[in-house]
Image 1 (cartoon, rainbow, N blue to C red):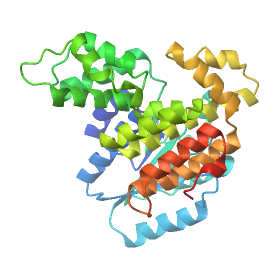
Image 2 (image 1 turned 45 degrees about the vertical axis):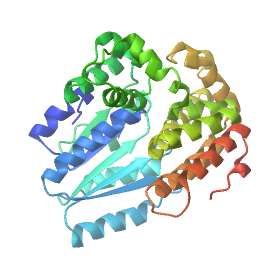
Image 3 (image 1 turned 30 degrees about the horizontal axis):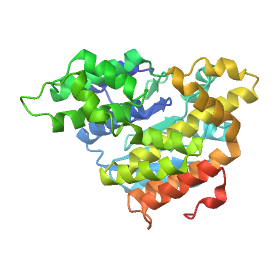
Image 4 (image 1 turned 90 degrees about the horizontal axis):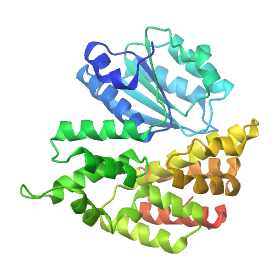
Length: 342
């Protein structure tokens, strides 16, 4: 069953599927979908929530044994599979199909997949017509979509801000919904009841720190600007910026680059790819990314990011910000050997 992003909340108010497939490349929307599904599942006593990352070497047989044991011996549980690969290979397609065919009502399975090609949506493993499966296809966000998301946050949290200011934020954060949403929170915390939130106020608030958001750290890394990398990381640490947002900004950017590299390998002209990049100023950065980074190297970086995510959650030892710095410098110098954290 296909579920549109803007209809998910209405769907969950009426129904809860055993399996949800989410395909796209916008972390904010993915998080929104997964969070809402998890919250609804918890209302139905699915209290445990386990996140498993799917890399190129993922052991599907071990996962199936694990999930089978859960259904036999555990309470109701939510399992979230997050793909870090650029595509779904044939083995993964078959395993997803097996999961769907052998689902049980003691487990809610959420599968967060990469952005798929148009031809992939016709494949049987997605089970779009299966009534036990909720399929959510996420499309690239336009400025209009970003403004709509910001407006929803304003209404939900009763922020005092007008549409002109929302337009300013949408342009300022260049499509990064996570950072744009955080900007609304920052404005709300800084403004008193008597504060007039207008464009002059926003320019004062964001003029100094807009260059030091998570997405910009990724950009500086690709550009090779080590001085700005250090300054940006120091700023993020001092302002208690969530390390996980930084990690997911890298993952989101790398997945986009991988998707475009794959398109080039399949014969798509680079000029055609660059025409779809929004905003315009990011075209040169994407062009440099496609020339600088290889698919093999990005896959290696994604493997490091999985471990960084575990580090940020105290699953394994280490200083997350030191690891983020090592990764950023490695990307900047285009040398995996720079990474000290393994």
